[in-house]
Amino acid sequence: MQVDWLIVGAGFTGAVLAERIASQLKQKVLIVEQRDHVGGNAYDYYDEQGVLVHQYGPHIFHTNAKHVWDYLGQFTQWRSYYHHVLGVVDGKQVPVPFNLNSLYALFPPHYAAKLEQALLNEYGFNVKVPILKIRESANNPDLKFLADYIYQNVFHHYTLKQWNLTPEELAPSVTARVPIYISRDDRYFQDTYQGLPKHGYTNLFRNLLNHPNIKVLLNTNQAEIEGEVKYKRLIYTGAIDDYFQHIHGELPYRSLRFNFIHHPDEHYQTVGTVNYPNEYHYTRVTEFKHLTGQRCFGTTYIEEYPQAYIRGENIPYYPIPKDEYRQLYKKYEEEAQKLNGKVLFAGRLADYQYYNMDQAVARALSLFEKNICTA
Image (cartoon, rainbow, N blue to C red; front, side, top):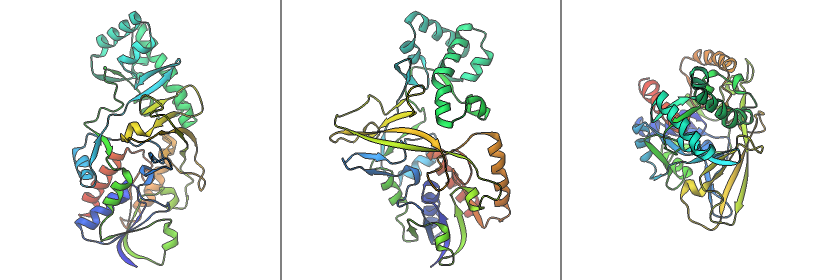
């Protein structure tokens, strides 16, 4: 077989780049994917009870980038959906990220009102203020109490479970992103565009890849086709240290394990996701019918258990946000530069960078325009 491009990985990055190359440049693309499906971690399917579930945890699409939303809109209709998340704190389910409604769910009304007024006086309304900023700079003792309370009860133990590290051991940027949202808006995201593909992510990927210039090989890794396929250029979306055979050592990741449970009732919980920062070994429980809007008998939900990543045994989900690991990645980035553009690296694993889905799509579109169209 002879193609213009070989792409390793059929997630968002690989699929978008394949579609652009095939449709805009009229060039032939072969995608090799080691799993038995397209879609990467966004893959969804109907379980034995007929419930549409996300195999690798909940995926809610949200973006402020109109060009990303419109681009994907060529391949799917969107189901509008606003994600709501509750966190269990002191035995009560409260909105997260922590906002003004959370105050009144946890504290006596007079004290909640006092905290609300202090936040408004100090920072104003409809703003997100990092907890770290409040902890370090607030002169008001009530605000310092609030920041410490959220840090300990919402963030600290959740971080331990998610990363097996304390917040202090992670890059400072992680803690800096945890906000108090001075608003009554209970939505988990505030992006302009939010939703899910009306007929599922797998259907979206099939439409993306439905082009005569694109072929897909599943259950296949790159090594298996070496010598069998001739190609001019390569796009690699897998782990960059795998490509270079770990010559500088392995980049660490966190992985996940999911426990799927079917329940005979119409719904199991009141919102899509409930976080458990302090109790149990799992971090969150997600019920899919809230996300998809599907109407069927019974419901399916998953418990999500963070765990260590072991190469060859489970899936790398999250690059670990520590400065020392970022420095290790830079060594592989230097190796990539030595290839002079013959191999392009992109995606969460290739860039050792956590991307939301819209960021992965935007990265792929940008790479196509800047590095492929102009080559």
